[in-house]
Each structure stands twice: as C-alpha cells, then as structure tokens.
Length: 532
Ligand SMILES: *Cc1c(COP(=O)(O)O)cnc(C)c1O
Image 1 (tube, helix red, strand yellow):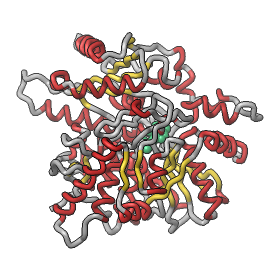
Image 2 (cartoon, rainbow, N blue to C red):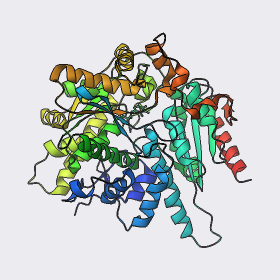
Image 3 (tube, rainbow, N blue to C red):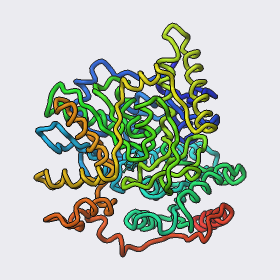
Image 4 (tube, rainbow, N blue to C red):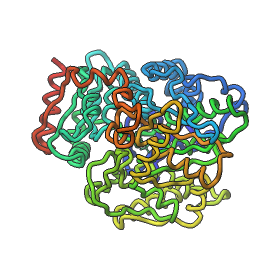
C-alpha cells in the first residue's frame, strides 16, 4: 500500500524509508533522491478549514500529510515548527505584497528569515529536525554509552552557507563546517557567516575556488573511514525536508490572494537554480492547490529553459567559474564545463539537482499506464530515471519522450532572463513604483519573466513572483541598476542587522591550500577543541 509518509528512491534501489531516514541520509545509497511513495491529496474541507490558518498552522497540516505521527508525535511537530519560524522578522513569515495592482502582479517575500534569503524557510526547520532526531536516539541509549553526534560539512559561495549556519548554530550534538573560497564570497555574505560565534560553528576560508571547496567536501563524504568516524551530514538542496518546508508558502500565499481576489487561480513565477523552490510548487499543485501554472525563470545558465523549449536536457560548455550548486546527484562537476557567472549567483548552475525528482513523475505519468500494478509503474519510472541520469553523466545530456515533455508543459512554463534584462527590471520597478521598491537580482529574474508574460498574454491572471533574497545581499547588481537615480542611496537599502556586520567580532579558520588532508586535520583539531 503506497503511503505519502513512506519514501522511495528515484532510482528504484529501495523503498519503505521513513521520514527520518530521508532527512538524515539526504541522498539514497543508489545515488537517487527520496520522494514520497504517493503524493497525498488534501482533506475535503481544506479550503474552508485552512483558509484562516497562520503559516505555522498550515505547516503543521501539510507536514502531517508527509510525516507519520508515529515518527514525530503531533505535539513535537508543532513545537519544531514554532521554534523554526520564531526567528523570522515578519509576523506572516512569508508576506505577500502587491507590486502593481493594475497588472495583477504580486511578490511573495521569502527573505524575512535570519539570513535574509529564502533558504532560511527550509534550513531553520532542517536544523531543528537534525537536533530532534539526534536527541531522541541519544535518549534511548543506556547511560554511559557514547552519544551520537553529527558533523555537517558543506561548501558555499554564499547563500547556502549562511542559511545552514543559522539553522544549526547552538544545536546540541551537531558541529557544522562550512568551506568557502577565501576572499571570493561577497563581503556581506562572508561577514554573515564568520560573525556567528557559537562553539559548534566553524568557517573554513580555503585558498582556492568554490569548485575546490565543493570537491573537497565530496571527497570527505567519499572517505569512508572519515565519514564513519565523524558521522557526516549534508544540508544541500536535495534534502527532502527542504522541499517539504517550501510547500507551505504556496498554500499560505494562495489563501492571502483569495482574501483580496476571491476565486482567483494564480500563476507562480519562480527564479530557479537547483529546482528546489519550484518543485515545492509542483507538489502543492499535485496535492490539489489551484495553481494556473508554475513558471521556471532562469538566468543565462538556462539548461532548464532549454529543456522546456526542446525536451532536451543538455549541458552546454560556457566559460566561467565558481557557482553554488551545479552538481548533479551523481557528480557532474561544475568546473569540468563551467557555469556562466551572472548577477544572480545563487542560480548559477550547470545542472539542477532536484530536476531528477520531476523526471521521475514525468516518467511515471507517461511511460506507464494506470492499469499496471503500482509497484510495476514505480519500477518503470525509476528505470527511466536511471537511464537518463547515465546519459547525463556519459553523454552530457538526454532527450525525454514526447509524452514526458507534453506532461512537463501541463504544469510548467519557462523563461530565460539575461543580466541586462535583470538590471533593467530592477530599475523599472524602482522608478515606476510609488514605494520605490528595490528588487534583488534573483527576484528580478522572476519579475522580468512575469512582465514578459503580461506583455504577451495580458493581465487577466494574477501572477505571484517568488522573491528569494533581500536586495542588500547583492549590492553589486542593485548599484548597477540604481546608482545615480534621484533619491537612491544603497545605505537606505541596508537593514539594521547588516550595519554593524563589518566591525562585528569574527571567527574564521584559514586553510592555506585546497587540500583534503589539510581540511581533515583542521576539522579534527576544531572538533577536539569543541569538547574542551
Ligand atoms: C538558492 C536560491 C535560488 C534558487 O533556488 P532553487 O531552489 O535552487 O531553484 C534563488 N534565489 C536565491 C537568492 C537563492 O539563494
């Protein structure tokens, strides 16, 4: 019997995983990603009973559909949710604002968490889950037995690192090590990470590139002795709990827009990199939330936009370097081909890790038929995914069947946005809005895509653009767009919390060479230091 609270791997190696398994393992041992055995449908009365729920209450209802109460009892789940969103500055957690009333253009602000980026919505929850599962395992141990610990290791060129650090700071039995390329992350992002002084947080400034850092992290995970000794954990964007947490704001914003425009079926426009944010929207839609379409908005790293236009998912060689993500689940390395550096760096990817999950559903819907046994349908879908992932690795790309492309177009549209268009839209929105709204470059990619849809299809559909970061984090692009305009001063964009960052006390460990053995030494020395 398929359950939405039990998980299988997209590559078919195994099934029957608990939610706890998916969170702590991150990636299945066959290299696949975890998905629920079935997508839950909504209770019959969801429209009426959920419509006045707070973000936290919605989170509880939605998470309960994917997590068995035998795994996390209701009261514990509620308390995890309360703690995860108590760090947000906005009472609504993810407020919906209207950018242009006459054009039915709205913005869903996802950047009111501790690091001012949308990744907080998921990583605050993931940090608490790690702590919860570890505490429970340790409570079950006989007195005197050694406690289970987790060593989270990740590489970052900006956003993921600080969100992970804020999600895990001060958590019991967890240590976190974030590698960044020394001198190559933006000053604000670097200061955000290194000004966190909790004993369990360690920033490693590695002399090298982001790809060097990413490669070292992968080598450490592959080092079975080191991994077994320190129980390595990952917080990268393929963790199922991250997708789950992101489903909530689609529901929350849906109800918000119903209050001003009853009965409307909105379109969501999502600035996309690793396909995690927009995939959460796909789950919301499949659960039964009325969504007209999900628009995937890419920057000039446009593998996804090309897929929706052609049915071919293909890595293009372009010059450039250093980007977050961009690693296929089975290891196409970004630096072998290179991504283009753009003004929206959190979306600079070569391939999108979470796209594999969508492929599984496309294959399930179109490569199998409803009269087949469920387990047989799942097996066929996983075989198809495996075949495509092998082609991605060996031939740098693949084409899906016409049926799968058709299925992809049922729920999604796509747009590609250049750097110059990104800058132009930041300027246009600032000058044309009374509030002088300042978009960050990632959100601007989404808004540009929405404006394009308005230009060709009119304004009859309400469009909700996901706004993924605060503009102060990306001063370069914002200055490019707005410098010299009357009344513009970047200091006005800076939130209070960023003002003291430059002079705040910092703690960072320099690593003189991008070398795995050296990083191992540093990690072990700092871990020993934590225990003193
Ligand atoms: C991570 C990130 C994105 C891309 O989200 P995906 O889930 O990887 O598609 C967009 N904008 C910002 C600011 C981000 O940090």
